[in-house]
Length: 422
Ligand SMILES: *Cc1c(COP(=O)(O)O)cnc(C)c1O
Image (cartoon, rainbow, N blue to C red; front, side, top):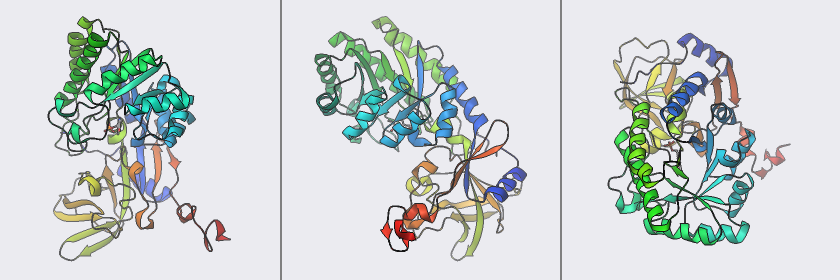
């Protein structure tokens, strides 16, 4: 069971709603820091362990800054994400550039920052070499394809995924890079997403350790970094259990000692690119009930919509909901909780048992700290919410303002709108 508690009292949330206005995402700094410390502690046994936060999960520099203070780097895959990492002072091996279908301009920026370049495709090696030259350290993204059984709901079967190189290509890529003067190598993979079963995460480590051993046996190359990607799940549902990070660390340590150490690879550094598990549970979308509708079903309309949180509409994902001030009331009403988009998927919850909701009630949607705000879009001309940080001191700071119509029209040049407004 994972208890779905609020990070501050209902009175304080109400006060925030009064002073900042709804809707907003609220991030809990203290909880983020404590969780990161626990995560890093679970891998403290590794000769070197680095977490690269997947910036796409929560691309706010204030959050990246907090994570950087805890020793966490950035996993970037676009120009904007590289700029965000740079803005908080990250560079060199504190940035991992795990891109795909990559424009050369982005490689240029990544290389200028000294980031670890993680090749998604074998053809990118020649392109980058021709255009800018290769760095002395490169990493290769592995896709095991049918060699890895199973699959996972968000990423699917590895052989259907667009990412990474085949088994044979990994070996070709290392040889090719060696011929081009590269001296240091890393391996990377990312084949699960939102995975709560640590067995899959351990199997991923075993697969990568065995790959490193095969590279050494076949090519005489000792890789120096193995990046296990992201994909650690979080308990969105109250009945789900959080991943036992200490156990995950111990099991991966055992695999490391069993597979890498006897092969003379006992110095390999480990990395991960978790996004969701770093910030996901520590973000909350706070919105106000503004409409009640009673037709074939009972609807509660919020002042937030899919623009603020896409996961329920996109993945049919469950996000727990707490009605502020009614935490202890019986959940004896069944509602669809909706946003205002002209899109029938725009529902935060369907047939959800909740206490009786009155207009003006505040609803807290849990676990929006990763792939929440970040995924939002402007469909229907809807504007994205603000982001607030609940600091360790207990004070609350706005770390991103809400979008305005001016923002929405900024790319237009039309009388009365955009640039020609005046
Ligand atoms: C999205 C992504 C991650 C982060 O995934 P989480 O599920 O948030 O842990 C890490 N690495 C890569 C390459 C990604 O695309």
